[in-house]
Amino acid sequence: MRELEERIRRDGIVEDGEVLKVDSFLNHQMDVQLFAAMGKEWARLFAGEGVNKILTIEASGIGIACVAAQQFGAPVVFAKKSRTKNIAGDVYHVKVASFTHGRVSDVIVSKRFLLPSDRLLLIDDFLANGAALEGLIALAEQAGATVVGAGIAIEKAFQPGGERIRAKGVRVESLARVKSMEGGHIEFC
Ligand code: 5GP
Image (cartoon, rainbow, N blue to C red; front, side):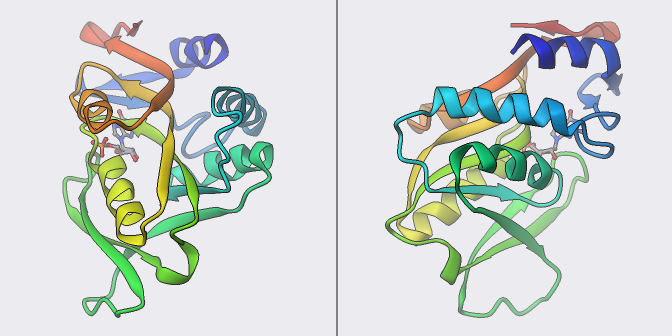
C-alpha cells in the first residue's frame, strides 16, 4: 500500500538494525485517517470471506483493529496479556514471546468471545518472527473458530514470521513489506 510505504519512508526510524520505530503515526500517536485507508484495503482484500469478527492482541494492534472493524461491520476482540498467575478455566490461553520486550506473556481470551462459528480476521501492527500471530492462531484453534487470514500493517520480510505463518496455510496480507533496513535505509519488497 503506497500511502503506508511513503509514511514509513518519511517518519519511520530504524533502531538497532531490526526494530522499526513508527510511534509517530502507528503505535503511540495514531494517524486514524491512515488506519481508515488501511481498513479499506483489508476490506477489499478479504471481501466475500464472511469475516464476522476481528481478533488482535494488546496493545498496539487494538487501534488499527478498531478502525478496520468499521469496514467489516464486525466487533473486535483483543487477546489480553494476563498479569495473574492463576489462569481461570473460562479462558483460552497461550504463551507468546514478545519481540520488542524479550519476555514471555500469558495471553488469554474469554471463551465467551471466540466461538466455533466465528470467521476471524487477525490484525496486528507488525509481523516479525511470527510469535504474536501464532499465538492468535492457537487461540482461534482452541475455540474451533476459522481463521480467514491475517491483516498486518508492516511485515519485516527479512525475519521468518511471514514464511512460517504462510507455511501453515494462513493467508497473510501485509500492507507494507520491508525487505531490508540496512544502514537505516528502508527498502520495500
Ligand atoms: P513477532 O511476534 O512477529 O515476532 O512480533 C510482532 C509483535 O512485536 C508486534 O505485535 C509488535 O508489537 C512487535 N514488533 C515486532 N517488530 C517490531 C518493530 O520493528 N517495531 C515495533 N514498533 N514493534 C515491533
